[in-house]
View 1 (cartoon, rainbow, N blue to C red):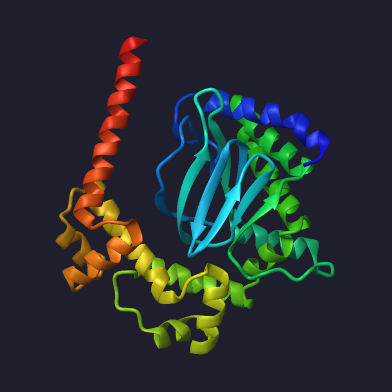
View 2: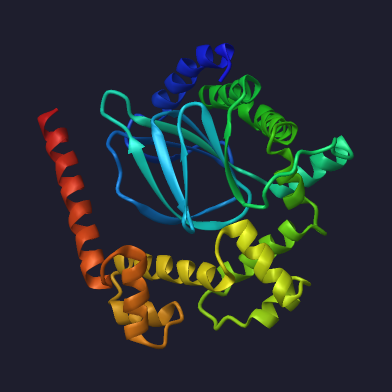
Length: 313
């Protein structure tokens, strides 16, 4: 990180902290912009990351994709170029110095339009196909994010200025070392774009039996090419990707909608309860009933703790 960026870091921290005064994810009035605050080291959370740009102002976070670990902190950003099922955890946060981050969803229609305006890319350094990468932030990118966050204090200007700043952020990303990655996702004929279409289909129809030949046909790829490039982009096979989606949704159904394990497993596509329990335990470390029970107790204890703090105040 350059010296100029270091000088702006405190302003970034202050802007995020002033908006997110309590722990949790905070949606903002600016479309696609979200702020996160956490005052303690968090438990692992399984979720699907959307195509997005995530910048940490303070603290550190780890994201596990397949068997790969991505760790990023105050001088880094995480770029996710398509929907990916991951496990994430904040690993550095305290009451005095909470974890603070800002995230922005990437609209690839706008990226494609910007790529057309910019014209052919310069000679590019070879980069991996992986749909997730940690990269070092630049002073120009931090400055654009700061100006976008300032609009939260000036809502009357946001409607006009936020789209312009979004375009600047996308331009800074395209002009940076990860520009080639974004370009590949925006070009409809690229293999990365085809894999993105495959992921979108799997996300919508995760409960259906997976037929690789049919999926390959849908995205105009051969079966062997689909397997190769899908793993290169997502760090998983299509079957593993579908399994992660199924298990995440089953866990959500049990935690949020109070379904029993048998009903949740059946709803996400499992015909065998024993297979569902085995695969769930491999993913989450323990069988469904035990994991969900522990998660509910942990949530109750955290809420109770918050209540005690509020009552003392």
